[in-house]
Amino acid sequence: MTINYWGVLAATIAAWFFGAAYYGALGEKWMVALGRSQQQIEARRAKKAVPVVPMIVSFVAELVMAFTLAGLMAHMGGFSVRAGLIAGAICWFGFILTTVATNNGYQQAKPSLTLIDSAHWLGVMLIQGAVLGALG
Image (cartoon, rainbow, N blue to C red; front, side, top):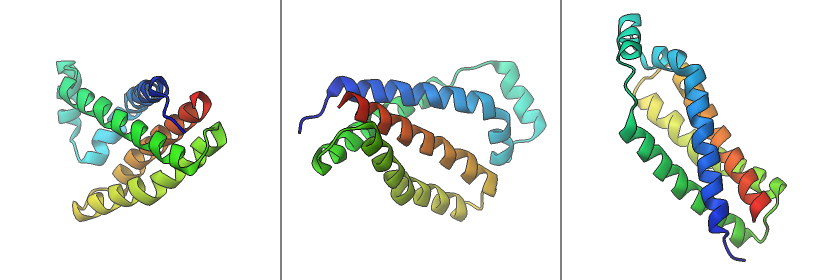
């Protein structure tokens, strides 16, 4: 099976926009989970600065993730929305959730940070899997 590179790009873009909307909606709760004070949150909001470098890093990381997920799906022998959702969920559970939980545990982060961040990555993996499955 071959990989549809346009599908990889579409999966990356869809996942990236999901992340923007997700953290746009949960941004303040996320910053509280990070341990930011209300003053720090308000100062950041007043700056209205767009975190360009992290956004680029996020896009590139999601591109690598989409390509890797497409490669796994190709080796497993099938592209369908169902197969993409299953592959995305398995990769999230086995690799992403475990990594986020471990890193946050050692950093003694609030459990809400693990919940917020890992739920974001679950959404990313499911979206990428569905798009890759649909576009083959």
